[in-house]
Length: 165
Figure 1: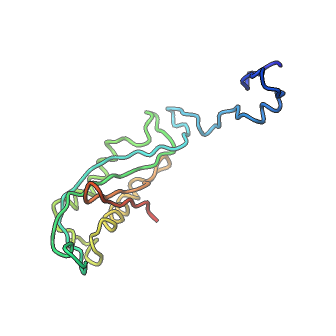
Figure 2: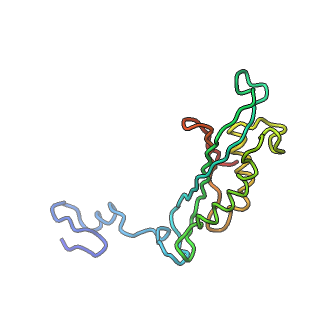
Figure 3: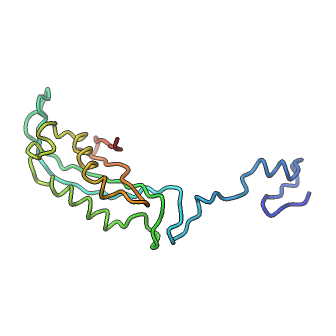
């Protein structure tokens, strides 16, 4: 059997070239072309971690969380990129951090129940994640990337991830 340049020759198998071509993917899909000049890629999730400290209480909660208390919330913001820029980046970490910090700094060292976003709803981890996502979405949406998720952890062992609507 003669081998073509598109397939791997396996002479011990009783298959002809047509059968082999049908059995193996021989071309790389064009969407996987990885070019630093803005070429398409499959998908990259790019994230930064940050944190803020704040106090809150959960109105009408049947337990201790109804009393004022605080947390050192840990935040992870993930952007999903489908293309790279000319430097080979989906989004520059510095740009991502600056945009995220503008939103998170509003919450840092505050009583979250007094923040306009939480006057009508409890400042639960769920609502905090939804608020941060909402505030970031427009600033983190381009033709190359978009906001994928916001994770909020109020302890090392519990948290929530919000993916938007």
